[in-house]
Length: 384
Image 1 (cartoon, helix red, strand yellow):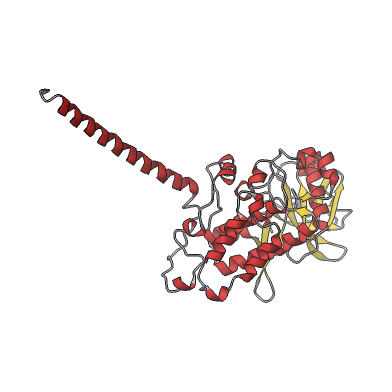
Image 2: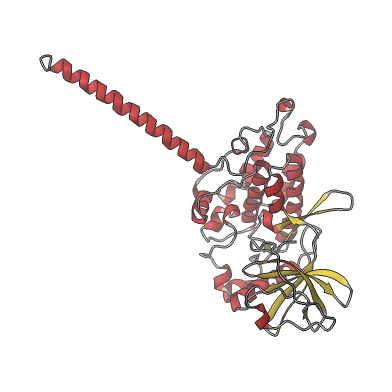
């Protein structure tokens, strides 16, 4: 399982293991040192192997020595009030959630200046890695994964918790015993607890209107403006994930984070067919994604359960096993290889429009010059 916040796996040297493992001290958190072999919570948790590291901290495969079970432990790299509050928020939010599609949190602590969260260990990989390797995904597979995400978010929303960072990197996919894929949503680090008044009153830098949180490619228009958000923001973000699963690219991807944020606010995404270079999709699937990605929250689904209901209404027997094919296109030849992500974007289309406009203007200028020349010759027959 990869850590959150864009963290990546990387080879590191482990601290030599000892049966009398020493506890972690704040001085060991400096730099990028591997803490494998050290302990937390009075020796209860033994850090066995680092799974990944990033700017915020590291995640370790660990052993709960009391019950002899594997867990994952996220350790904050540098402790300050804002980061500690984010840790507290993630632990508080996730401990309220007990659902098959949500990562379980067992414990949270801060000892000797070291903050950590003890979580369920997931033997899987983020959807983001799967998309890099296999995208676009077949329609049936995409919808099956999104349905699981819907159930997870429904469970959270029922408990007044918004995720606010729904993206492929925060969805871990595992194989169940029967071979089916099990999705779990992770990282509630910037979640919003709607009925927790202390969040807005005491931590204005974390949750109040005017501050922007999330990942640019998957943020709702209102989120990009730092405006007040509700469960419809998570629905928009999930729509971005579904769009990427089906087409191989997010609905908006600019040259920079700022441009991407502006595109969410002002530009309509291409249809699934346009973004996938002409692949046919059932009209009901196109409508489903368009409604999830509506710019105005009032035009989106109001509850995540409605998304789930509309997916369940799709008659998948009418569609071919191929990605996005309708009954009329079952025999249509499929491309030999999937298109590279982001080969067609609104930005690229805008560039083509500019070239066409320049050509038209040039023709107008040429025609105008010819007309003026002819008119001048007619008015001055003796000239030259």
